[in-house]
Length: 220
Image (cartoon, rainbow, N blue to C red; front, side, top):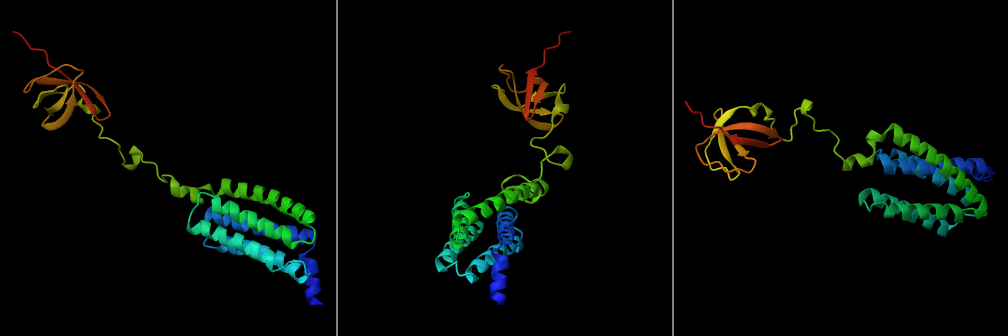
């Protein structure tokens, strides 16, 4: 008697739809946010109760459970061996296939599954928007911006060199090295040649590129 009542409750369209919602949302959020298995456990419980109801009613058989089980295994493999979504798609197909096969009326099951999917999409979209900083996609992007105010610089800022004078210590053809305020600096000219030991002045700094020109000779 208890089994019959439990079966009737679990296979009721509303109950079955809610269980499918829990199953889809739980497993999908687990794949997206990796919650240490808690969401996956809730999802599996939802699907398990769905199948239990139809099993007690005598409709779900070993084959249906096997198809569903294969789907779970594929989804678990996706967590361990990322396949760019291939295993997830195959797993979802098996899960939904098992859901349809377990029902005595696949059409009714498809309707319940469709409603559950629509609600799940809304919930999942909300979760992604709210907890986007915790998603698995953050593993593939730089989490912290490398900004100057945090102490990160792509190149030393040498804009202070503009206008300063120095001396070439190698020929500039047009690149070479100069001494500017006692510091060895890699410099470049605008195309002209400057020989060694010539007075130079910094005319421009573009990132790591320090542009110089030869100082004009002074006449008395």
